[in-house]
Length: 145
Ligand SMILES: [Ca+2]
Ligand SMILES: [Ca+2]
Ligand SMILES: [Ca+2]
Ligand SMILES: [Ca+2]
Image (cartoon, rainbow, N blue to C red; front, side):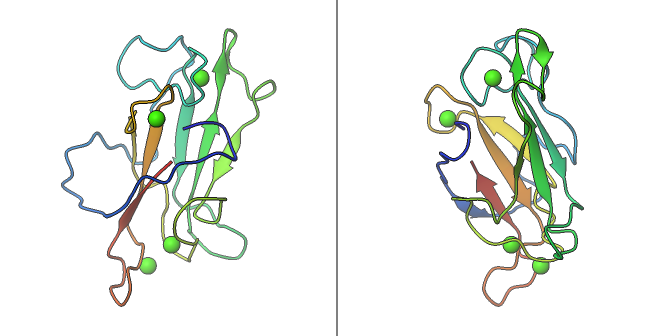
């Protein structure tokens, strides 16, 4: 995942709760340490320092209750530094994120980090458990950014 606004939407997949990828409801999956250390770290901007993604599943998007959001804080040699590396907020209404924010989507319910396209940037898979698909309510989906 490069810093905004460049995003690569790799897939919008049916969400399966039994998926084997590591999941954590609303838990941070990164740490403010140089990348390449312990598992769970992410380097979304490829600068060698770990970054932090946090699911805010019950975040309202405008007047859309519980649409959900994900905050990303970038680290540097001083650790996590929102002042130097501004916090980013992603929703399904963000540029190039597939789908649209709707009430109750709960975008960010689960997060998984992987470099899906094998470039220099870690990517983030974001579970959206209550995404409607066509006529199927709350079928679920995953955004990959
Ligand atoms: Ca980084
Ligand atoms: Ca949606
Ligand atoms: Ca990548
Ligand atoms: Ca729904």
